[in-house]
Image (cartoon, rainbow, N blue to C red; front, side):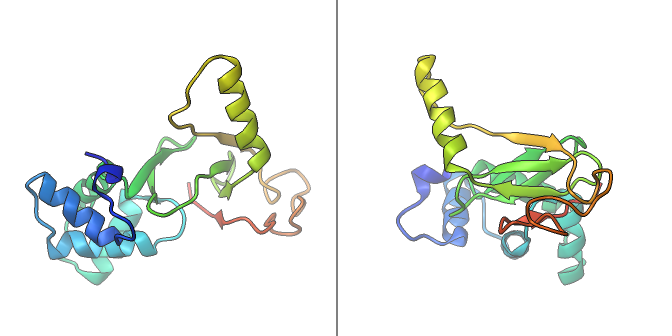
Length: 173
């Protein structure tokens, strides 16, 4: 069962998660609650290992398997989305109340920039219509070199750090 079937107007992520767990005969434990809290506070894209390190600092009794299983549950109920970039590591990003976005990914350092471009979104819809598709969802990841990793470095439309008002998250490799 997805979050859309459980989510009432203005539900909090905790309420959505608790409803999903209850619908699947599972409980909202203090450990799951803490993992959800830390996950939602995490900017960008976190692997289960990165999230585990943060959870462990708050509660050393929570094991890595608990973090991994909880991330899977968060993805199943629609509060998280699993993303895999060129490095083969599955990361998770919050998916609750977040506008759809695509990614620019540096193949050298792994930095990731979340982008939203209405022109690209319209073009994708036009292409789907042209070929008779009814879009359910899409994902676009663009790979290349960030301004810091390009020969000569420090370039790009956003200046020295390549930021142009978009959310830039450094995801280490």
